[in-house]
Image (cartoon, rainbow, N blue to C red; front, side, top):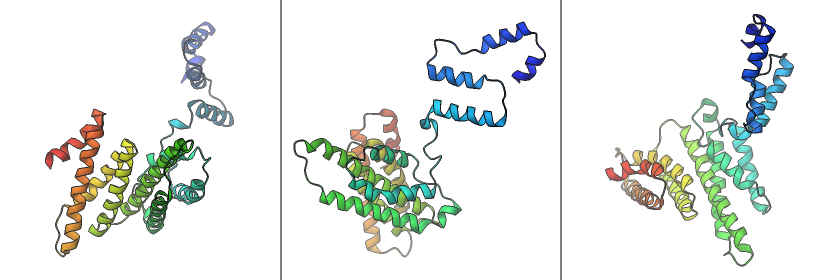
Length: 268
């Protein structure tokens, strides 16, 4: 549009237009660079690609949605690398990597993932068992090791969150939600939520309980052919679910987040 307009204006008018769209000098340097890139004249395809690369480098990767590159292969590759990475106490990037992966979960149902459901479930189960084993093996903090123990506890907490969300992603690919599957996932969700609350990971606790709300709803529905033991297990898990939500509400200071939990609690 700018180019077409330029062809029908005088040189003086053109210079005035250029001055009008020039970035203000008081803006931050990164903003100024972005504006400069957008106001450049149209270029050849190769130059255009180069301009887009520069724009991405200025904006940074943080502007890309967390689930933009969240494919099955990325998820499995990350999950498969965790056993070795958890052994490396100098892996300072692990916490950030966990948070990036968690933001993109759970994965939405798709035909591609349906074919990989068993693989996702196996990965989630292995990682959950790994987190249980590592928590059992950890020793109490002492002296200089206190800071490292705090980091390790947080890593193990995020490992549990990630494991649950992988299991939840796998279950979402199935047709329907069998009660036995919901009971299994509810147990995992409640354990992970408790660990999050103990570790002050309130946003992750919220995310887990939001997913557990779906299981609670299914378990609240009575169906023919359900054994007495299964009904009793479902009722116990539902009570525990609401108890943990109550704990989370009492610990929350963010009123916007608190509003998420009020309707179910009032209903109870």
